[in-house]
Each structure stands twice: as C-alpha cells, then as structure tokens.
Length: 471
Ligand code: BYC
Ligand code: FE
Ligand code: FE
Image (cartoon, rainbow, N blue to C red; front, side, top):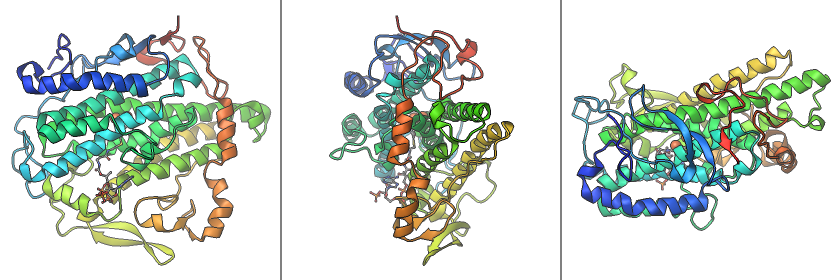
C-alpha cells in the first residue's frame, strides 16, 4: 500500500477519510515539532542529512534515501499490510478473529501497554540529544540522526493508536507523552533504563545494542496482539528496529576492532595512553547496559504478564511458530529464583513466567552479537572474552533487586559489593576517561581514533560519503 505524501501527515491508514482523527493528529503535530525542537538533536537541525524515509510499507519500497533536514522529515503513520482473516493466536480468545478495535474490557490494559511503549521512544531521543556535538564521524552522526527520527516516528505510531482508538483519554495520553522528560525527577519517563544518561558514544552504542533490542522483543510480542492495529503498527516498527541494533552491534564491533589493533601494534594491554578504550572498560559498560535492559522485561513472576497473555493482548516472541496449546494454563517454565542466599532453578507456572521467558529469548539474542565481538578479539590473537553477567547482577526490578549478585552469579554481601563494584561497573574515572575521548570528527571519511571505520557505507555509498552536509 503506497503512502500518501501529499497529506500533511504521511500515512497509509486513510487519514483523509477520517476527519476526526485527522484533526486530532493535526493538532498534535505542532506540539510534536515543538518537542523535537526542544528535546531533539542539539544543532544540525538546518543541515541536510542523508536519511531513509518510508515511501511504502512493502519489502521493496519502504526505504528511500535522500537528503532531508531533520525538522522536515516526513514523520507519519505506517502500518504493515493487514494479514487477511487474521485470527488471535493465543489466550482465552484463541481462534477468534483479530479485533479491528479495542474490546471495551481491555481498554485500560491496552492503553497502558501502548503508553509504556510510546514513552520509551521520545525518551531515547532525549537521552541522545547532545551526542551530535561529539560525533566520531559523519557516518556515525548520520546513523544517530536516522535512529532519532525513527524513534520520533515510533512515538507517532503509538500516538496514532491512542488517538484512533482511545478517544479523549487517548488524546490526554498523547499530550503526556510529550510532557514527561528522561531523567527529570518530577516527571520522569516510565521505565528505568529510559531515565539513565547516555553520556557518550560508547554508552550510545551499547544502548542501541542492548536497549533497542528490548524494543525488538517487546514489539515482537505486541506484534502478536489480538488488537490488530497494534499488531500491524509493531510489525512495521520492527523493520526500522533492525537498523538501530545494527548501529549498536557494528559500533561496538568497530570499537573492539580499534582497541585490538592498538593492543597488537604496541604489544600492550595498557592502551589508554594510546587513546582507545581498554577491553575491561568495555566489559563494564556492557555489564551496565545489559543489566538495566534486563530490568525492562519486568518481574520474573508477573500477574500482569499472565493477564496480558490470557487476554490476547501481548503474546510470546514468535508465538505463531510455537507448537504448544497457546493457552499455557497447565504448562510450567523454568525460572531462576532466590532461595535464601542461593540462586536456584525452579519450575513455575508458565503464564506468570512470561516476562522471564521473553528475557531468556532476549539473552540468547544478546549472546549472539557478543560472540561476534569476541571473534574480533580472537582474530587479533588476544586472550580476552566478553561475557554476559549473570541475570541477577545489578538488577532493580524482580527478585534479584533485593540482593547483591556478582557478575558470576554469587549472592554477595554489601561489603563485597562496595569493595568490588568498581571492577564490574563503569567508575567515575572510567566515565571520565571515555568522556575525554569524545571530540567531534566531522571531516569526510575521517574517524575518531577510538573507533575503526565501518566495513561499508550506508545504502551502497562509500564510507567517506557526505552523510551530513555541514556547509
Ligand atoms: N522500570 O508486573 P511487572 C523500546 C513496573 S523498549 C520501571 O513485573 P509487567 C525502545 C511495571 O510497570 C520496549 N518500572 O511488570 C528501546 C509495574 O508497574 P505497576 C518498551 C517497571 O507489567 C530503545 C510494576 O513494575 N516496550 O521500544 O509484567 C529506544 C510491576 O512489574 C519496570 C515495552 O515495555 C522498569 N524497568 O511488565 C527506543 C512494552 N519494569 O503495575 C525505544 C510495553 C516493570 O505496579 N510494556 N516496572 O504500576 C510492557 O509490556 C510491560 O509494561 C513491561 C513490564 C514488560 C515493561
Ligand atoms: Fe523505537
Ligand atoms: Fe529503536
């Protein structure tokens, strides 16, 4: 289905045929743009950026590349093609036709899920607002802005659902999404990780690797929803998400590459004096971003998660590919739990364990990209390996939030934690060192000394393409 760009709000949902909805969104649009001016990327707003935009949502046509000034980016509303005669795949309504509108009894639940999802999108833009000023290259700067405009569009995607299906409450929520601010103690964003700082590009790459990947798993679960507009919205968002995780995986891969080159060249582990990030510091950043992202899956045992599933509003990752009964009333699932000061595996009822199950899918995915970073280290003949810390490490949500757990999975006392956490998480000194590397590099084809150039450019363009025109 082609996207109508003649409309003030590009869309493939026939906005022209729904005056009430169009008016609501046209009222929201200037508020969004005001928010973007305020909280979007600092600087560069008048520059031409080589961005991709959706022109249609099918596989061939959705990505078109060209120079755009960010405030002119065509944020709009794009749903994946409907699946004909789609039926609900799980829960109490399994086998019934998917809902074109919100069932009254699930209104509150769906609204909350959509708001929680929507809240993360502008939050991430706010967290990354200042990064342009210290970009390691024009290539990276362009990728940052691509991610930022798409997170802005993800906000549009959720606001569309709120305006189209939740009436007055929906409009109020759409306003509130522009009012909360990442890290603001008085009006914080909803989920923990989205109130953390993204102070430097290393944090940013780990964020897009670990936190955008939570996005992938949450969106995939919501794409299974019985509420069909949510499913179609999330299916299209997932196609954009792939690029965000690519930025994270290749970003860290390039940092690792550069560090290894310097280690070989100077035959030393002591690489800070050569202006690159040592591998142990990378591991600490990894530990931080991984653990705060694990929190985003919620508690191991969650009645909410059980209800979402039974109601048919949020499924499992790849629900339709699974061959069980899709009801899970009698099923069990193995979860890690605390037993005094030991961590044990235990069978629990499957329904309330669904957060943990999704977290397991996520952990396996995190490990795959990390293995590719480890291959880079191996290829340089260096004896070091990144590991994912234990799931109980540095948690603020769920059963492990009550105790201290070491990266290797021992429940430890506060004294040991106090003594050793600087080995496990970035210290002030580590952050100051990484911060000291962050100087803008904006000459075409040139890269900061702490990161290797990418293997190839964007959309078949050379690495030294003029990705952001600064003059
Ligand atoms: N921080 O029953 P529980 C993305 C709250 S990322 C703060 O265990 P539940 C993106 C919870 O709300 C994807 N609070 O949790 C990435 C509940 O509150 P109430 C975002 C938290 O409900 C990068 C209470 O604790 N999408 O797209 O089973 C860039 C008990 O929790 C946290 C979604 O999250 C936390 N980490 O599951 C841009 C999908 N965790 O009821 C974008 C929608 C839990 O006591 N959200 N709480 O007031 C959901 O599916 C669920 O809300 C959650 C939590 C999975 C987040
Ligand atoms: Fe997003
Ligand atoms: Fe994303």
